[in-house]
Image (cartoon, rainbow, N blue to C red; front, side):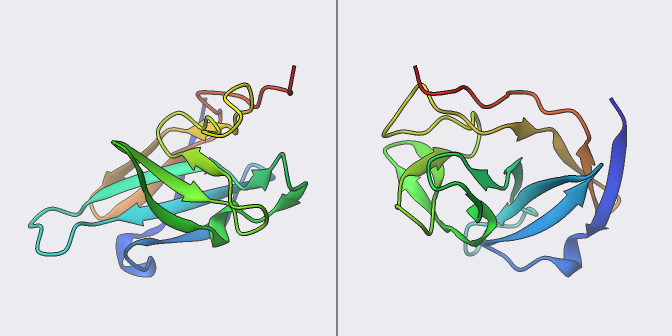
Length: 122
């Protein structure tokens, strides 16, 4: 697995997503930061393709939480995908890829190989 430098943290907007290209794959990159927190917050990277809606749109989804899970709601049909696991909360057999992401010297780095892959509906 190779790691790609994507951008500076300053290039991102807090509590929103952006689509980035990693080795030819569209990846939805999210930066979540709690208001008033001292740290840089958390970065998440998942596949941008919504397998239920059939389009590359997850980076434009609404961020939030369902219970204790941080999620993005697809802008198409509003199903929720867990940012940590890629699992769809409404259809647990469906997943989107999750990519390793880290912050090093204020630079955002994403691994080119997903940690989890999409699972087809059974």
